[in-house]
Length: 198
Image 1 (cartoon, rainbow, N blue to C red):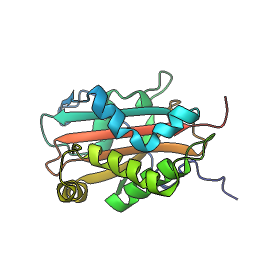
Image 2: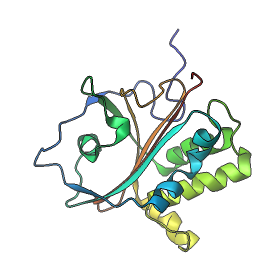
Image 3: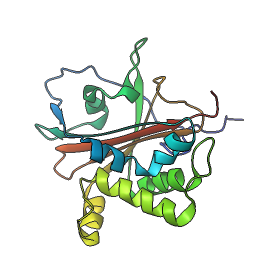
């Protein structure tokens, strides 16, 4: 019998694993980080309870690209994310292109049910925090009209990713989400992990 999936919140267990390409390939656009302390906090809202009340780690970033991205799996390692760093070997990444509904279900599950040692925010507040994270991943701000946020959510390309790096607890609570703008020149990333081992 196969072990319980450790991608409870992320990509399907049987996704093909793709080696991360080294940085410096001329076909990969250059990324400039646009993350502010405020956007990092707001992006993390759906998983904040994992870090506040359990053993969770969170990473949230946004980037502007100097050209349209052709491949997210090629772009990811150039972003120098802690969740994709492994000093001992070249990590691999599993990338799942998905729709907004799939991302919503991941974020809602994370916010409402919580991590390893907490019970989450339950239904109503879980929905609110998941919605806030999803909105900020598209570059929306609190003053934007709901219709504008919904349009951006539908227009963005959504991905779930997982990697073999030790940053992830690789127990049951692993999340890797990326949102790419319609012009493929902005990318936002939210990664989170939690574990029931100290």
